[in-house]
Structure formats: structure tokens, C-alpha cells
Length: 259
Image (cartoon, rainbow, N blue to C red; front, side):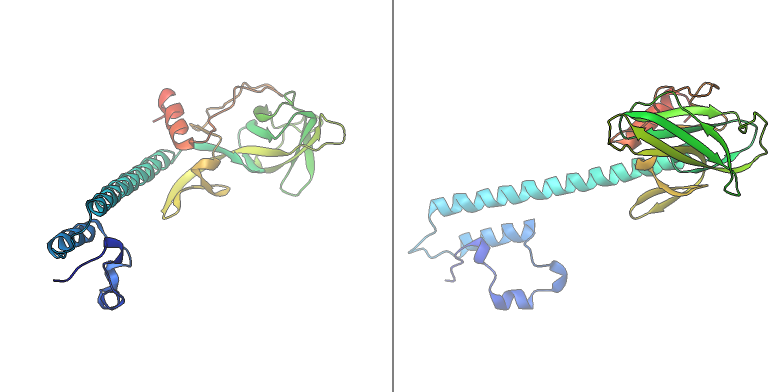
């Protein structure tokens, strides 16, 4: 009789070379069980396999089965997460998203803008430039703490005159509250979500400022619904932002009756 010394050594080099390539280089669950049964049927009766060896191989089989079941469960969770992300992304079409960006549109005389501060600042200035790069206004936010903050620009120039509708740009500057230190500041703008790209790498929102991932969204609003009170320098509670942005955005929109 032919003796198979162990499952891990069951395939010879010739067997592996003759095996179809589509089966891969690793043993599947059925292969493992087939080899185990074959070993039992073909063991040398004068020199049977030690019981400890059987126990070890059965333990290997159990571990393999658990590992494969875990992989299947993880694959299902990943697919479920992707489906949830796609549904969340599709529900945002026609809404406005808050993202990092410098360009925004002034339409009806006022617009909500924001800024993200990486640390404590002693001074922050938001310079507004028109389409020609000319500085038309400068805002001095009152909230200098780390985080996301929002305010409403009334669309006025330095002299208090109303500016025409059009495209404008935010240039943000900040000084650290620590002497000799630096602090980062990034402008936040609201942009229309016009579509969704459901690619292999995940859902991307198509907006006026380009493609944006769900994880890069700081808030979602209905058009004309603002996150702030119409007062210069005001800072409301920060919008949705966190490690699991899909769940937080969905919860926020559901609570507000947006979806």
C-alpha cells in the first residue's frame, strides 16, 4: 500500500506540476478533507499513523475551515459596506456637500463658507478674491480653536458695497498661538453634488470642484439650507465628520429628514 506521510507533504513536485493552474498553489477545504481520508485508507497497517498525528491533522482541518468561514464572512461584510456606501453616495445627488476647497459661487448676495484649523491659532484671516485674482474682502473669524468652523459672508467688499454674482476664491492664513510655531488652516466650501462615480475603488461624488470621496466630506445639506446663522464670524456646531463617515452622514441626514 501507498503511505501518505502528511497532509502538508501530500503533493509531490510532479503532482503540483500536473495540477491545473486555475486551482492555484494552495489547498482548499475539499482537498484537505480528501487527502485526510486518503491517508486513513492507505496507511501502512504494520506501521499505522500515530494518534497524535491524526489529532494534529484534524486540528489543522478545523483551523482551515474556520479560516475559510472567516474569509467568507469578511468578504460579505466588505460587499455590504460597499453597497451601503453606494446607496449613501447616490442619496447625495442634488444635495450640497462641504469639502476642502478654495473656489465657491456667490449667487444671491450671501454665502456660507468655512475653514478647518489644525491647532490653536492666535489670528485667522480669510481673504476673498474675485475671478481676476483681485482681493475684494477680508474676514476675521472669531473662533480660533482647532476644528471646523463656519460663517456667512454677506457678499460685501471692503467698502461695504455688494459684489456681483460669480466665482470667488478663499485664501486662508493663520498664525499659531504658540510663539514661533505654525498652524495649518484650510478653507471649506459648499459644492453641488451632481453625480456619483461607482468605481472599483469606491464611490466618488461628482461636484463642482471635482471628484470627492465620501471620507472627505465634512457635511451634507439641502440646497439653500445653511449650517450657520447669518452673522460674520459665527461658528455653529461642526457638521458630520469622523472615522466612519458613511454611517455618520447617513445618521445625520436621516435625523434631519433629508433622506
